[in-house]
Image 1: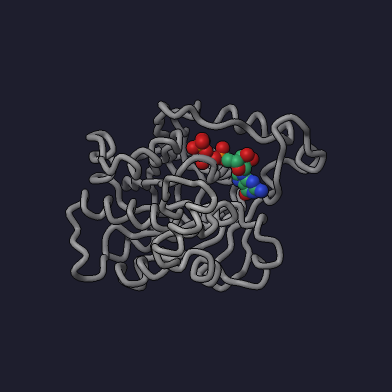
Image 2 (image 1 turned 60 degrees about the vertical axis):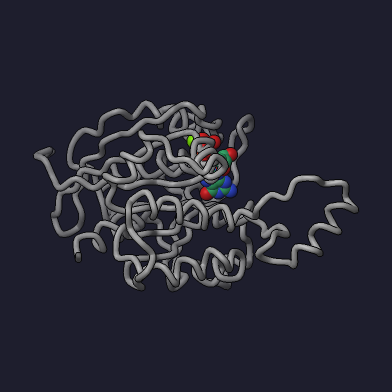
Length: 289
Ligand SMILES: Nc1nc2c(ncn2[C@@H]2O[C@H](COP(=O)(O)OP(=O)(O)OP(=O)(O)O)[C@@H](O)[C@H]2O)c(=O)[nH]1
Ligand SMILES: [Mg+2]
């Protein structure tokens, strides 16, 4: 295999804990090692430790555990696209707790600042089924919320997930020094609605942008207002295609192999087994600039 240096592509994968970052990483690796997808490996990947445990669990038809919150690992995946463009993909895996802290503390530690400044595109993973729009000041009048919380004896008003994600994006845009006075060209952004299989019939009837608009309207309009149309994309992702258990093997997974599960939902709602498409498309968008 050829492993001459390609053009470096740093993707900042952003997602709180439990959105599916590690399982996507492991399934993506399996896809990249096959020949029939938009991206494929052209040399030896380095630093795959982060994915070993998940890959092992999936081969046994089980799901793996959380990534320790202090972990931050970056692996280098030399890939080539269908047009022969060689790309060195830097792919991170980390405990999503770190992103939660960025939002809660409203502070971006230096290491994260450096990562954000040097990356080319953002891939924001949102697990829509776990992102219910709770009551917050964006969805209901404050007086309503206060009276309900008082009745329920709840003291703290937490912002909803969509408010937190908007806050995260605002913070990151600020760190990159990109003002929002005009729509953003850079960084290109892909919102990946993960665990799409959990949506059931809604996932069959709606496109990813429609799901984002109906479930997380604040995030949807923030992105529409602040990004140039062709620099942002909303896709669905089901890295596993179904729920797996940590302690009970799924017979189908063992029979067919984990590489035969998982799909991406494209903007028009079509499903595609090629889990490398979100990255291939982001790389193509970045190449256009
Ligand atoms: N149904 C379904 N479950 C999934 C899918 N992808 C991941 N999961 C499950 O979601 C849970 C979280 O996935 P992880 O990949 O560990 O999430 P993470 O973002 O790496 O979480 P942290 O390591 O805590 O940051 C696991 O129990 C997975 O089995 C999917 O496509 N469909
Ligand atoms: Mg993880």
